[in-house]
Image (cartoon, rainbow, N blue to C red; front, side, top):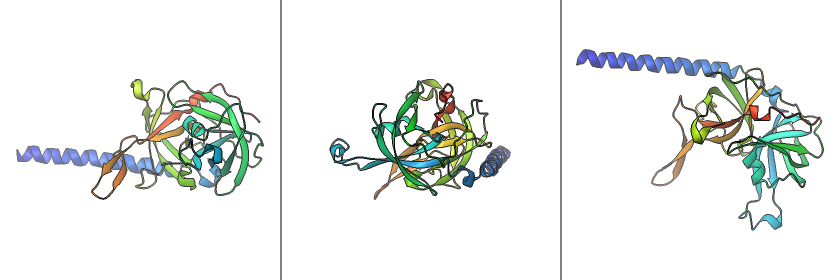
Length: 254
């Protein structure tokens, strides 16, 4: 019995050591994956404001914020639910504010196309006035390999955050079919891609977009005085994304 317990302890320590080594490798690889300065002009917070006529139907919401990235000076990509919440359409132009640490720019946008066949899709937005200072991102059609390091630049709450992590797997089954699952974090912050990050690009170490952020895996724990949202456990995917391959047939507007 004593020997059996000792063996279990050794086995648990071996598993823990392996997980720590994997975590350190992922952190190191992700840290060297991309230069934030080189990505700054490619990604921005996008905010759609509502006027007085919308106030009643939006429940008093004044604006909707997400993240978008430039596919060309005249086009941006974001998650479908961001564009829908902003009430953007393919029939009329609506003014949207584009802002990051370097720019603050307002222009009218409309939906150019919708791509994807699953529950969450990608939206390509057309800018009425193309932005000359935009740095267009390249997309990668080659599938990701398990444990491949990635980075994401997002604007949760309108504030720039650079996060690193790894690709876990492509989604399976009815619930996750057509998705890509990642574990992404900034230090010990597993909620780094929180509200306002939807639409952010996930990039490989060559700076090519491989997926677009759609949602976080969280649960709410109720304490006596407040409720707290928590992420998944370490080693588990915590970010749900739309694979970039849905844009396979799109040619950007110059």
